[in-house]
Amino acid sequence: MNVPQSPRTQPEAGLALRRLPAVEKLLESPEFAPEIARYSRPLVTQAARYVLAGLRDKIREDKKSPSVADVVRLIKEHISGEWPGFISPVINGTGVILHTNLGRAPLSKKALEAVSNLGGQYCNLETDLGGGGRGTRVLELRRLLAVIAGAEDAVAVNNNAAAMLLVLVALAHGKEAVVSRGELVQIGGGFRVPEIMEQSGVVLREVGATNRTSLHDYERAVNDKTALILKVHRSNFVQKGFVSDVSISELSNLARKRNLPLVYDLGSGVVLDTAEFGLEHEPTVQETLRIGADVVCFSGDKLLGGPQAGIVAGKIKLIQPLLNHPLMRVIRLDKLSAVALEATVKSYLDKTAVEDIPVWRMMSATAAELQTRARAIVRKLKAKNISAQAIKGDSMVGGGTLPEQSLPTVLVSIKPEGSLEAFSRRLRLSDPPLVARVENDLLLIDMRTVFPEQDKLLVSVIASALARKD
Image (cartoon, rainbow, N blue to C red; front, side, top):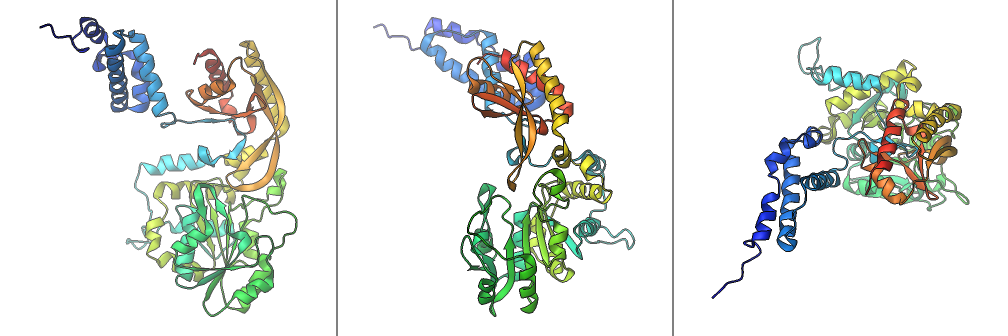
């Protein structure tokens, strides 16, 4: 009796399967040299095996073998789809200066040089060079932070949520913290002040209403179980209309009268006057401490323009319990972040922050400067037969800071033929990726957040993306 051949043993399918290139042969091809350099050989091998396995199943069905060029293309597409942002710099064309998804504040060259110089060497992270024994971890950084904050002492941990948690655990565990209902905020990634307080073992004593809180509300809430008064800066949203809250100076008087510390979570933690950059005045760390806060918490990677960090500045008697708490070891700053933060702080002390720190360089860029760059890019694009124009727009600071405030900017506007969504995706999957805005059927690239040294590369990325087919 004749037994039908299975697809595996059919001659046509077998011949088509044998035409598929071997994994090792593919990896030895110059075609994959860029991918191996960027992603590593094991990841490219994994992608090749996955694609070839899928092709074998398909061949058994239709008995057709793809060309080697098609196999290479499919593997490359699989890699870029699986690892689109793998160790990749990005051109930020969104106009959002502190773009959380793109790493917030880019580090200054001085911070990068400090990391490069010290990261590969031993350094006195917590060594007492005079006495020869173990010293206090990053003591000099603490002293520098205290100087720019105008505080008695300061300490840095790995982010501002950790800073708040440490303050609450060390100063108020098992007791109450009084806070306005209108300040129980949530910031990106689901971080909510009430949940952090719950994890700290602190009882949340809410006062006032969502839109209005008075000093009398705080006065009535303070009791024998109260450990501190907490104020949280609404840095990522604005309340308008029938609203009121209590100032730091008013709360400071109450706190002193009741012998309680006043803690202020500033969030973004600016140390320069934002009004000098065409924005509304944002409370600075220095003035907040000067007008009565005992402890201030703020981020290192927002308006300070440094690495991810949470900084606590204030009175020595309140900072010391934080340093001695066991949680401090869990959330302490790593050495590379400490080095980068120290270099960032030095720029403020040297009064070169606006020139050194990318966040402030972008904030201070004038519309005329951006216009000149945008027009030059438009000319180069038109020379490549790409329709583009320079138009006016607005940039945002972002990163949960300065809500509803913007800076005038200049945008490069492109209306591609075909699908705008597909074109935007090709830009995001370029090397390097270009992330831009899509508004009113146009692709918009904000020149404020594109570094000047990226202008030539920007033209190349746009031209390549338009030339590619989906």
